Length: 535
Picture (cartoon, helix red, strand yellow):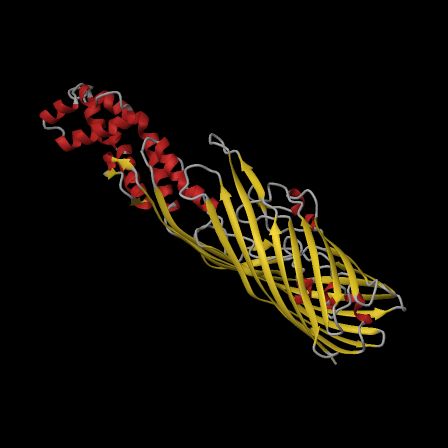
């Protein structure tokens, strides 16, 4: 029998991205939730979205603080037959998703600082594991049946949680070149902290194999495989034990009952030899043929018995309880360039963030699956990105905005593997991810501004990128909310955004097995509250 449980893969992207690239978050303020087209706007959160435009703020000190509460539901379905369940759910929560921006503006100069979760930001919890876990346990049943050991049931206990957060600490300096143009230069320091905790334990099956004492009741898989390994080890030694009888001219022609009658074998020994011979040739009654013929059969079968014993020992190890407790940490630097053009009612913002090549280092406490060798480094880049935004105010009450982002995912490396090797994303992607946002606001009163927006994201990954553990889905989002000015120096922002993910179906065609598919879908909901202060 071949080894039936392969190494389990405990890794998952645990971010709660509403907008942005595969690893980059752009939902970086409460104001974003009510209007995601912020690339050409001039609020305090322009410290992130349009740093070149900060020179348009009034002179003084400005502070923006906000937090988002984000939830995400993940649903993975599989059409593979023979499983205990075909639906797997994951829940991601980020009760704290903070952002903070501070700007000091004086004449033509604006200096800003910022802090935000530039990537990740939540934890994904799968109380029943994932399809890839179930497949490997379910494979025991089909493998045992194929080996002539009737098995109809399996069970196991699994749980998995992955958390990921990339914190960004940034500083920018913006300078107004003339009345229309300004530019900025900045840098962001990114820290990455991922953690993985999970187990797969108590794997049980119900093999019906009376020869080894199993009658179809549930038993721990390692117990069964240990017994089977012992059985095949004993069978591999039979050829040696009966060699003296088979090689003696006086006994080589005797049958097992005759050897028992002559006192050369006990009844138990003869029964064991005959029972083992049934594995070699079930169509021949070992009690009717001479010991020399039995010996020849055992000699020919010994390599197979030895291989089966080794396979059973491997299965015993593979079905033992497994735990993962690992942390990954790393950091990198992202240079940022911004430009802003302003002409009366129109404002255009441009931002370029440079690629940061980052590796995270494993700090592993427990790794029974071999996925997180302690001290090993894994690629975890931040891709370069371009943002272009336009803000237009046709009247004092109405404002319109458009923003386009693209992320150079193909030029980065996210720690994805192909044929057992880490590969650049260009082997797993047809094109870079892009997103487009439209937003508008209406100033209902001098103190109250209402806004809404729409955002669409298009992912360009190949099927090879997608898995139940980590997948990228195209999305569309709707947001809305309000800004209320308590005074001319204090304003409150509130927003809500709902994100829908396009369903993706990945088809599988395993060798010598029926084809099946996996369906990936998600939904996000975010609430945000922020406070803007100016002095």
